[in-house]
Image (cartoon, rainbow, N blue to C red; front, side, top):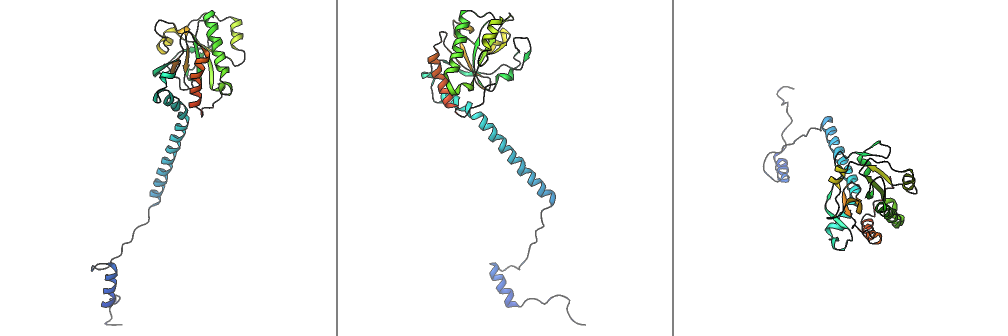
Length: 247
């Protein structure tokens, strides 16, 4: 129809005034239209959330695995149990040497990683076991059995710093019950890891290695198994969550 306007009529002045008052200012009313997020943005956000969740789960697993060992060190070093310990506590602990060369009694190479996962009651003795060797190996067996239901948390390890043959009788002895893990290791590498007390030799001590391969404790040269057991009991109590079976 000629003469008519194509745009919608303006709102009455009274209505405009009321709407502006409701908005809290005197500025003209305006409307903003937000665009919807793109599919690629949503996918990226979902990926970030999955990555964050995966990292949190990984940290949780690491924390659970490390907690028992951390608890033992907290008990011994933070709570200052050194004064009550019968054994020599090694501060700082000594890590398993990188590239440690190990062989079984048949000359087959053994990965040093196999030493990890358990507490290791460790003796260093020659292939031809003498009276000193017999005494410490007996104490090693005795200490493990004295742990009762906790004994599966401990393994027996015999480190041999020479290449002499081990007699059939001795092989049979260390295979009885829970076997002793017998491994040959070069003397220089062994001495770079474990140390005797001043004035003594490696073969006079029993050494304790923790589940991640760190040397943390050494018995006196004249080992009293009942006193050494008290130190092990503290470790077990601090590591109540460590329940992996023996290797």
